[in-house]
Length: 110
Image (cartoon, rainbow, N blue to C red; front, side, top):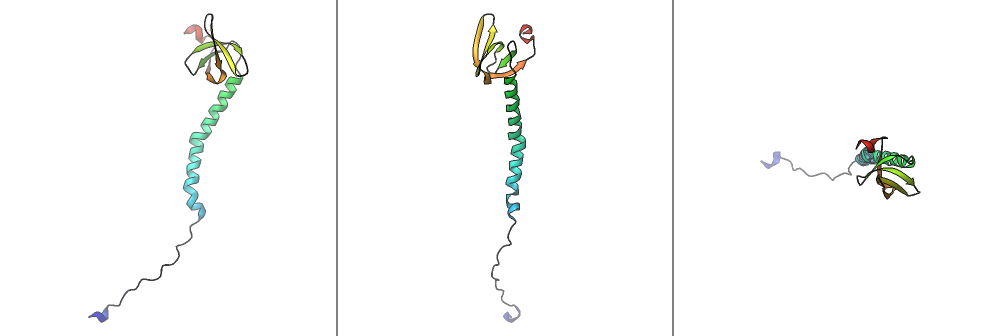
């Protein structure tokens, strides 16, 4: 009964088809694009706005610091700003510590 069944032999394995290098790196490229538009670009925009705000500071502006202090700008130097936080009380801070410029009259309202 063996004569009706032929023996099956494995064929020699051929080389796998060459994949396109672009297809291999496509997920990495897409991931970088997502990171750029979701993280890097908004952060650069925020930093640009911060530099513009600090550059436009002038004496008399009412500002908020990253430590939560509200004050009025008394003096501006290259790297530092002097804020009056209460009558007769002034502090000297780095310009980068300023978070926001508030509308005029905010200090009187609070």
